[in-house]
Length: 141
Image 1: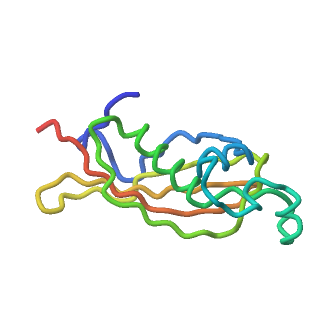
Image 2: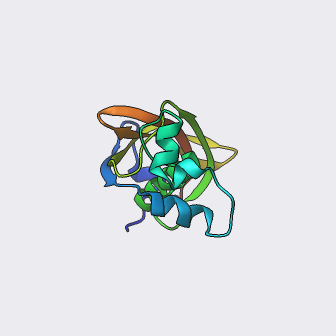
């Protein structure tokens, strides 16, 4: 992972897409084996009974992936200031998700170099989660 600096980032810069395939086992691991969770996250039949077609991918896990995706792109000296998301539709375990992102704003805020990125998860060609991640970035200056 390389470090991005404020001066090197421009509005409309894109992050290379990343494909991940969530599984029901990942959902169980994400929440912890001893924590109660929605049975539809670990059991395809429970998801089908809810009319969803299979085991669901937890929204919190998708947010974690989005944050990691942006953090990995930005580098270890960046700091995630905020994450804001809107869920558009559920995703099913076993189906690939593509994370995609781009820089939508670059500014100084209270003397801090800030970049804002729009990030989306896409499954079956449709967005399922849209979000904005605000980063404090290191400056070369």
